[in-house]
Image (tube, rainbow, N blue to C red; front, top):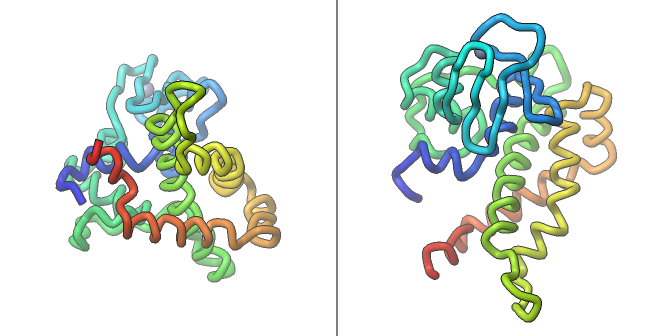
Length: 207
Ligand SMILES: [Zn+2]
């Protein structure tokens, strides 16, 4: 594990998923209503690695967003992200324990635990697939197709669809996932655990 928690967060979480996790509704064009100034029409644009508000000029990356939203220092914000999304980057020292938005106490506990865990797992897996798709993309038609590239092609659509339902769907849609295919995030969790053992990004450093 590298020591740069800030870079690790960027590598492992899509900024759009992060801002959605903290309650923003991002439209298809990547715009949301800005949480830093009052507005009714979205002028807060979320890019791959940064955001910019065309209304008030707020600008930043993953950690900046959480730092400003919750009034934290940057290291507190990084720890909070790691904690909330279950990234395990904070060495167990947790500065700011804040419950995730998704856990609501009055509902069925097994379902809520499943939901919380599934969101963490799929956010992480989706980002990993995007990364694999980029670095293992065959350079020419005669290249042997990499297994990780195939996995990203095969799994990305369903993973994104499923995650969208969990992050954006109403409770009915979330429960549909739970009833119909609740094992999917569990299988992905297993897959991520296997990959941890062989290091997910090993080839990046090896090449
Ligand atoms: Zn703004």
